[in-house]
Image 1: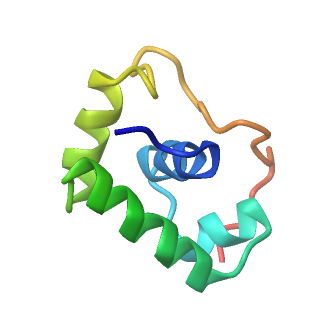
Image 2: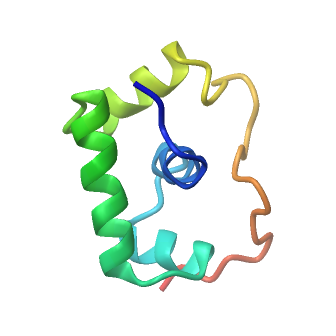
Image 3: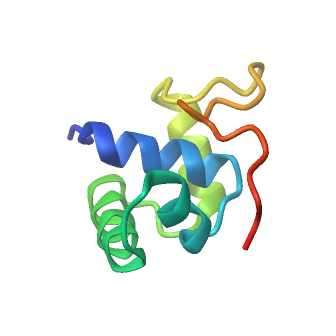
Length: 81
């Protein structure tokens, strides 16, 4: 099972605690596209809760809990809608 680059980005944003609306803003895509990506991630990983997905991401070395703010290209002054 392999995640696409975009799915991996979404996993990182989920691990940072962003909502789907915030992820859409951050990635410059529509909310329904984020919904589809999240559904695909859940189907591929079997993780249906964010906490479980965070543990999965750490175990698969997608995120490292020792490194803060792992959002690639993160907007520094992100306005939370």
